[in-house]
Image (tube, rainbow, N blue to C red; front, top):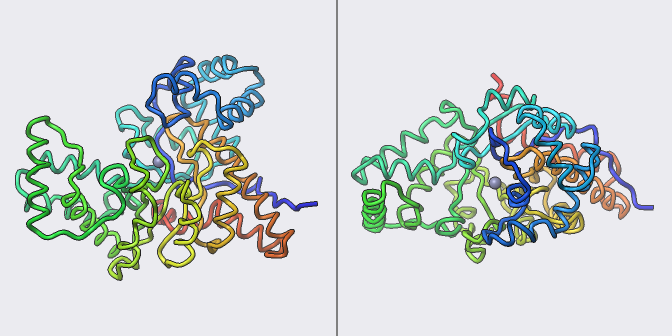
Length: 384
Ligand SMILES: [Zn+2]
């Protein structure tokens, strides 16, 4: 009889998620489209509903709302305000804290921090999404020197500015192999980005020498302020070139002695590169692996594989629970329920195999679900 470690009473700290839409999406097509990373209109309207994840989500919500079918679920949620949805789902899933990536969805579409805190009852810290901030500064500054100065100001006192760390989506722009460039290369790259900003009023920072150079300025600040940097790794919409989004591409950062005091958080379990991610968390003192239970949209069995790989090699002090939920609170909700269950069953296997005793397993579960994130993101500092 395999044992199971019951973690139902442990409130989770969701170490990577996004804001909730103030105006919740309505209608079946918009609802289904939330549960796929595919930009293909047919996939978003139809096949998104034909996955193990979506069927499990629907079944779980039918039980929660006491309704039947997708339409029943939609009617139940559309009959509630955003505040009511957040309140009911966050309380039911016992979500004690969140680490919010403020870069997506756009703040003007999102529930405000005050409203969210009041509705959810969760502790809250925010991360600054670097690329979005850099893009605004490229539009604002008409010389490379001014831009560098602007970035230095932006990152000079991160906690003072209200953030607990940074999030980077370099994987979505120019890849995770972040390099050091000569001054000439960085300036030439700035000139190209600036020309784009002048002609279109905005810029998408796909200019590698410039982006890498600005990222290093932010990493220097993170290292000296002892603040974590989350990296999007692996799974995402096809805008990400998955070949350049493997965590192994981060080697030069992980090896850099200047960044030893900068915790590097590898997001989404690095799926499908979860063994690579678990390995990195097992050998680099500053590498942490985020294990995420709503996005990627996976079956219970595949989340179990990811969790086995993580717990199979990495220290329990280096793993952190998340949902990667965004826009709708159902993602935070199902991740907390399924995450506790999957982590509890994998810890049970470790006990059955004689790897851990039951007390050690329970403690490991508490660390992954809650304590590691409370410590790493300085929730106490945010509370002061
Ligand atoms: Zn995310």
